[in-house]
Structures are given as structure tokens and as C-alpha cells.
Amino acid sequence: MTPAPRILVLDSGVGGLSILEALKQGLSGCEFVYASDNAAFPYGLKSQAYLVERVEAVLKRLIKEVEPDIIVVACNTASTVVLPSIRDHFKAPVVGVVPAIKPAVALSRTGVIGLLGTPGTVNREYTQALIKEFANDCEIVKVGSSRLVEIAEQALRGSSPDKRELEEILAPLFAADKLDTVVLACTHFPLIVQALKDASPRTVNWIDSGEAIARRVESLIAQNSFHPKPINPNPVNQALPNKTFAPALSTKAIFTKASDEVNSLRGALLKFGCDNIAFCEDIALFEGLK
Ligand code: DGL
Image 1 (cartoon, helix red, strand yellow):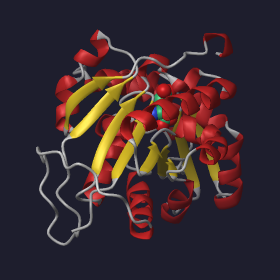
Image 2 (spheres, rainbow, N blue to C red):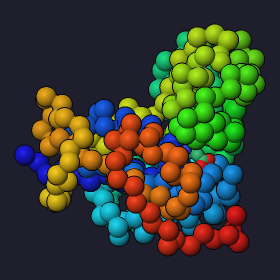
Image 3 (spheres, rainbow, N blue to C red):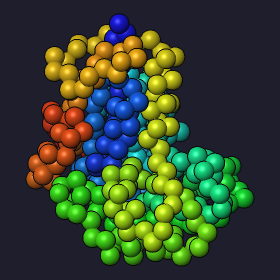
């Protein structure tokens, strides 16, 4: 049996759990470590220079701790700015999560597509380049919302999103009559997709990047040979019948700041298989750079 590859999944907050879930659905027998840079949350309101420094520093520290075979930056806000520079710094392959514009274009019949992300992501040059490459003939309606990130964070801590507030956030998308597809360009948003659907005036396609990332990681696993890892004795998931890897293992969740906000997440983390919480607080915050 192939030894379990260890995959580090990083986001600013809980959003990356939507990617962790897709990875667990698509790949069995991998060892996952989830990391939330909650000390620097939210990334959506930070400058590009800050994010480049911060994500690199956080990854350097986590790599020492975790020794991952593959790193997934499960955050559109970070990936759309830090990928080129961080890829040069690390031996482990780095997979970024970026807006699923190409699949949205394939699915849309009207060519009118919504892009719902953080203000940072929807305004990035990287995102603009994706639009130019894959959606040049489409109308892209952009909505950048940091509030929606906050709503998703609170939803995982047990507070139901307010339907009226969601309707207001979504209104600019549905003002475009022909819009038939919305790209969830923030990993937090798939966590509240049902609430978003319930607050929408009509049925549209909602696309996220989860499955594509799982396929990408699967192909990296197939291309690389990974070293054996000590196997955690507490498997939390059963192996899928047709896969060759060992059963998925108990997932560790690492936070960069200990706080009550983390305590209130314990129930949600367990639902995603994160049954072991740890802290890694010794990373510089670059306050001056914000
Ligand atoms: N989950 C992150 C993303 O995919 C954004 C959250 C934040 O603003 O920190 O963009």
C-alpha cells in the first residue's frame, strides 16, 4: 500500500474547510493538516505586499512543523497574489485556489456570470487575466464582500445568516437579468451556499473550485512518490473501496492565534474531521505593512 501523502491546507480562517472537504471526498488515505492564519484574518482587507510577506512566513513556519508533501493555499485572496513568489521558496508543490472562471464559462448559457469574492480577489490583476483568457466574450458582474466572509465564519460558530442581509449582498448580481452562473471566488462561501441559494431571487449555477483542486492534488500524488509517514492510529474516515491509499486519518487543525473564537469552532471542526487542535503563535505579524 502507498504511504499516506501529507497535505497542508492553509486559509486565513475557516474557508479552507470547504477545500479540505472536497479533498477528503476526492482522495482517500491522505493525511491532512488544516491551518488557519486566524491571527491575520481577514486576508481580504490586507494589502498585496502584506499578504506576500505573511503567507510566506506562515508557510515557512508550518512547513517546519508539519513537513507536508503538498501545500494547498485554500484561499483565493492569497493565491491570486502570492503564488508566483512562494512557489520559488518551497520544495513541496504548492496548489493555489483561484476563481473557477473557466468552468463557469463552460456551464453558462447566457454568458453573464457573477464573480463573488473578497474585494481583494475580484479586483486583482490575476483575476482580470483569468477573465481575459477564459471569459473575454462574457459579461462578468463582480461583487466583492468582506462581510460575507464574516457571515460564513459566524455560521460555522452556530449563527444562521440573516436572509435580508444576504439578499442585499447578492442584489448587484441578480440585477443582471441574464446572469445564470455565480463563481464562489472565496473558499468561505461554499460553506454557506445553501443560505446563498435561499436568498437568491432565481435559480442559478453556483460554482466553486473544490473539485478541481481535488483533481489537481490527485494528479500531483500520482506524479510524485512520497516518503512514508508515521501513521496516526485514529482513522476517522473509511477508505473508499476503489482507491489504493490507506484510510484518511484524523485531521489536525493548527491556528496561529489561540482565542475564544477558536473554542467556539470546535463543534464545526469536528464535523470536518478536525479532532486535534493545536496552536502555532510565533509568527511575526508585520503590523507596519498592513
Ligand atoms: N477564504 C479566503 C478566500 O478564499 C478569504 C477570507 C479572508 O478575507 O480572509 O478568499
